[in-house]
Amino acid sequence: MSDIIQLLPDSVANQIAAGEVVQRPASAVKELLENAIDAGANKIKLILKDAGKTLIQVIDNGCGMSVTDARMCFERHATSKVRKAEDLFAIRTMGFRGEAMASIAAIAQVEMKTRRYEDEIGTLIEIEGANFVKQEPVATPEGTSISVKNLFFNTPARRNFLKSNPAEMRHIIEEFQRISMANPAITFSLHHDGVEIYRLPAAVLKQRIIHLFGNTYNQRLIPVEEETSIINIKGYIGKPEFAKKTRGEQFFFVNNRFIRDAYLNHAVNKAYQELLPEDNFPLYVLFIDIDPAKIDVNVHPTKTEIKYLEEKSIYAIIHSAVKRSLGKFNISPTIDFDVETGFSGMITPKAPEDIVPPTISFNPNFNPFAGEKSTDRATAYAGGFDVKSAGNKNWGSLYDIVKHDKVEQGTIGLDGTTREEDNFKPLQKQLMQVHNRYIVSQIKSGLMMIDQQAAHERILYERFLVHLEDRKGASQQSLFPQTVTLSPNDYELAKSLLEDIKSLGFEVREFGKNTLVIEGIPVDLGSGNINETQLFEHLIEGFKNSQQELKLDKRDALARSMARNSAIKNGVSLGQEEMNTLIEQLFACKTPNFSISGRPVIQTLTLTEIDKKFEK
Image (cartoon, rainbow, N blue to C red):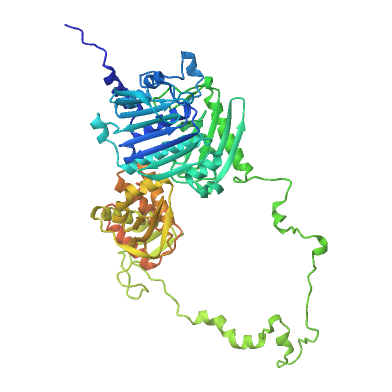
């Protein structure tokens, strides 16, 4: 039998390696941007077409490459950052594996122009599917420009698995945000299909966060800074009142490298434990500076996982640093034993000589024993209020309540039917609302209790699913259309959901950069005081949460988010007719007994159970 094990050709090996390094256009964007940063660039431009499927171009003004380096950078395991094994424990650069450029070149058509500052002419290299097509001198500005065209052109299965353009664009924006946030001293710009998405000037960290997420974040940030012998921490955390239902705005950077770490994330969330509900997540952008010898970044091809030598100590330091900042800026309650806060609001800042003592005015001519016709009695009170005449006219109003017909409480027999003398409409059941949270109804076997919020969520969820299927959601026009400005990431998400959102009954259209106009809302939401902008923002946030937590279908996640944000909440008082309508609609649902979260909607208490409570 002949030997069957053989070495794979380089082209095949590169395509296999590319599957780990380049999973989608966002992966290629990340590698190219990190290379530009490692090259010392202070100005980086990212240009995209079709969310990176047709073109990804990164232009930087870094150090550039020589002719030999330009050719070598596309070879596997070719890198300028590591010389020996010991260098792996002193890594400060973003890249070090030497696989990214070879992997990208294996699955795309790549064109690179590069020139060093000291060279008069640069180098042009073209590669297609790991095969060198052209190499020649070219006139080009100093720095490097890399164009990646037709990603996955030779691996159609991988290309077919890519999501829609808005979905892929959201992943690219996430990578762009992380890298630009970690390097606020570098000027970044992002262009997609000829439209400028971001233009970020060089700034400090707080300004970079505001440029990325919007001016409203200026009031949301609390600084964090801690220096220890193990790690140094700096950055910002968000105020508790601005926490969201998703983890999207949570960033950890170790030595300026973005990482994902559930253990460290728990340290931050624990510091907010008494300030936030369980399903809310705070904003944080925290930078950890640590000796590279105490960590291992060579764990995963994407380099987003790190191993630490002193993990428990780092956890404790992060937790105490965040807790301290929350207390220092009066976010969490503190006690000052030197000040009696109970009387602090009564202390006046005025000088003693400016304080005027109160005066008393009275009528010296007032005689309480004078006749009833005396005018002194009327003028004895400020404002000339005539007590006598008021008493003669209105004394009877004190007893008006007695004149009202007494409202008799309706009674219900054990069969659940009402008698004719009951003060309720025919065919209506007697309902009672408990603490504005639960609806209680008498049934043959005892009592039935319904969670009003969970019931309304179930009703709206099934109704919105029908609208999404038949795309016939009715809309009511807003008298004054509202504009809503979203972050670039949320805007791309909203664009991908626009058709489904319209089928729910929203009238929405694009209006300029990252802005939508809401001209109508679903009829199912009623005509109350609805903030269309806030409702739409909560809809997007809830959709992200549903997809992250449950991995739901897009339409199912949208219906859940809409139902949760539109349903009546606990604490809302309902009338008899409203409660009857709610119950009728609930029992018309396909699954009335369970909420959209899987919890019970209806509970019953039988007469036997009630008798046991009274020890009968």
